[in-house]
Image 1 (cartoon, rainbow, N blue to C red):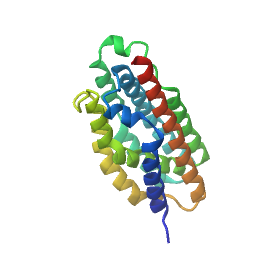
Image 2: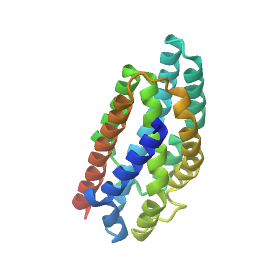
Image 3: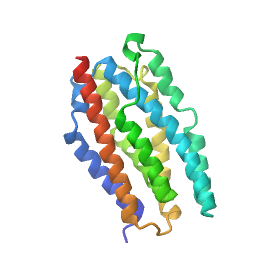
Image 4: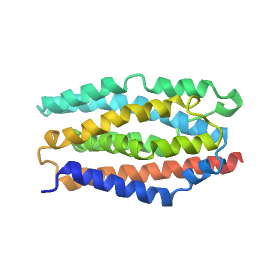
Length: 221
């Protein structure tokens, strides 16, 4: 019998494989064509995402308590604690960039939409947000090192983008634990197809984000 964890792992791996061909972001980085303004937009968007993800984990914990699912509530409380303060990593990275590069930055529209999608998933059922969290962590693990290598080729060493490096290290542990937990936290409702569709939509929104970073790179060139 195929478990939800197995389905998620397979779907995320297939999506990541396709992502490499559907977006130019990785190629731009590897070719040294990702300028500071594009990296700054990435970091500002990451800061916004990390901060709001932590807040939404707290919302999901409260929603789980209302449903009487205290095991799920405890999961989200733990995750919120794990994510607390991570946005400061991105803020620190941004502070290392010239003011001219970071001036007027706002999070990308796609990342704002992704945060809104998190809230939508919680409203459907908090367990949908468990699947989302696993998606976010596992795909970071799958692409993290090649993304960092690409950024290095564009002149951004790991010490300059500590938020990405630290997040990758944390998510290696978190993703492994998440695969072990999700089948226990999901009790058959909503249907697995609903959770998988939620993750698929998150992937589509993230691809728009990649396109927005590419667009910023072209404008700044």
